[in-house]
Length: 339
Image (tube, rainbow, N blue to C red; front, side, top):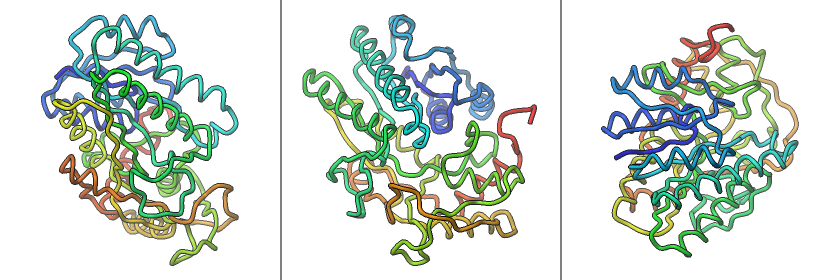
């Protein structure tokens, strides 16, 4: 199958692209390289022993996107491209709405114009907001609490309306929880630009000496150790979920929604301890106040993905930390060579 992967040079995109190549698919990656590095795709090709086609394009350039899709023979699109930092989205909401929603609309117009109607969309558990009703099922109400999450929620609405208006579309909305880890080779992994927004890459940068300590936001939640609990999923399990969804859409029409998570929660302190075990020494941390809007506990009910896709996450927190540390240790400044 010929697949267009938007944002394919990024963290989840590069791991999914590797899986696509290993499964024998032909891949074209579209990426503007704002939050990613072309080195990731060089390594993906090294690992897979296969080549891909890369186009440095921005989805806000509607004409260029349409021209790419006009080249023909695309059978599906996996759509990762978008800005994704929650805090930044609060500070720059217009930028997030413009980039994520308008970029997606340009992609959809191009797909529609050129007869490509199979789409796997990278959504997020942030669409559920601060719901306390765990485990979260796909039927939980959507109530995103920040502009980033709302862009995901709005795009889900757009795709739902599109699927209702034109029943030739096959669309998967994948709501993932907290992606972590790296490919077992240590060659590709998460390389955030600037200060990491998520826990595990921050812990990894402390472990490798790039930062002094981990800030733990709140230790007075109603959880076993007082820190927030989240569902962490290995990026390779997540990538496998995309391939499973792509296969599911091959002979089905409609809009489908799946949570991709482990169904188990780990606290902040459990993650720090597990990463310390992978490193072989304790990770320094400091307790500070809660962040506004953070919920105490959030984890998935992934049973629908198991039933429909025969997909489940297999890697545990120990392996997530080991693989993430292998990547960070061998690439202390990520894909950069200049430090």
